[in-house]
Image (cartoon, rainbow, N blue to C red; front, side, top):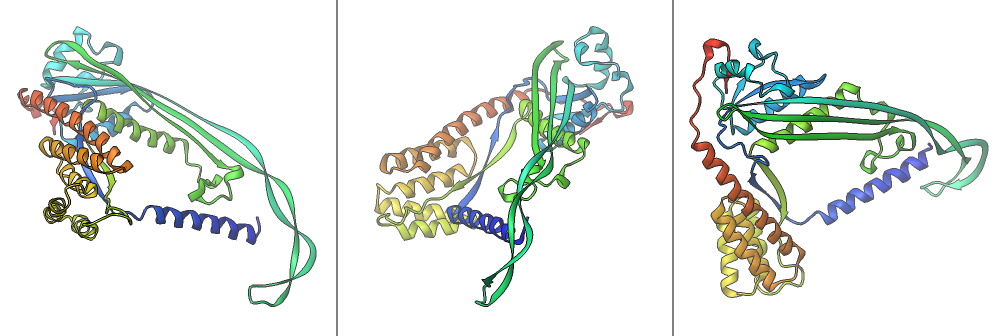
Length: 372
C-alpha cells in the first residue's frame, strides 16, 4: 500500500472521529442504579462456590468468585482448599452423600458449574488491491506548487493472509439450597468470539474496524477474555449489580424559548456535581414557565441520579410532564428508562429484604474455610 492510500485512509478516519466528536458534544452525566438479580436466591445469605468442571472450569470459577466478591451481596466461602468437596460434581450436587461435607462448611447454599469451551482458527487469503510502482515517471506539482517527478503506479491484486478466530465458552450452573435440600436455580451463560485478523483488514485503521494479523491473540488469551465475560454474566444472574448509564442533558435547543440560558446554567452546575444548585435553577424556570419541557426533563434527570425509589418516582413525574409539553426523543427514552428503573428497584428491595431475614452463618476458620 502506497503513501497516498495511507493518507486517504487516515483522512477518512480523522473525518469520522471529528463527526463523532461533533455529534457527541452534548453535555452528559453518568447515572447509576442497582439492577436486581435475574434469579432470586431467597434465603441464601452465605454461599459456597464449589468446583466448576471442564478445562477452563477453575478459570471461570476464579473469575466468578472475584467478581462476586466485588458486589458484596453474599457472604462467600472459598472451598478451593476444602478437600472433602473435591468429589462433588455438577450432575450430583444434590446427592445426599455430600450433605455431611456441606454441613461442615456452614453455608446456606452452594453453587457449582460445568464449563465447555471451543476455539477454532479459519485461515485463508484475501485478494487485496495494492498500488505498485511501474518504473515510469510523470511530472506533477507538489503541495508547494513545484513540478516534481512522480512514479506512475498500477493497481495489482496481492494475496493477504488472514485468520478468523471463532471461539465460545459456555457455563451451566446450579444452585443448591442446603436448608431445603433442593436445587433452586439452574441456568446457562454463553459468550462467543468472532474476529478476523489480517486479509482485507490488514491496512484498515483500527477505528474503522481494522485488525492486523500480528494482533491475533494466543488461544488461551481469547478464552480468558470469554471467561471474564461469562463470570460477569454469572454475577448478574444471582446477585444485584450496579449499572451505570451515560445520559444527555437538554438545554432546550437553539429554538428554545424563555429560560434557555438558565437551563444551560443549571446544566453547568450539574456537570460539576452541584445537583441541588442545578435543581433550584430548573425549578425557578418552571415557576416562570410552567410548560418548559427541557426544565422538567433535566429536573427529572437530577432526581434519577439519586438512585432510590422515592426519587425515581419523582423523576417519572418530571419526565411525564416533559413528554406532555415537548416533542423530543430524549423525553420518551427517559420515560422508558425510568419505568424500567422503578421495576428493578422494587424487585431489588424485595431481594434485599429477604436477605436481611436470613441469619449469617458462623465462620469455621479452624476447618480451613475462609468467609469473606
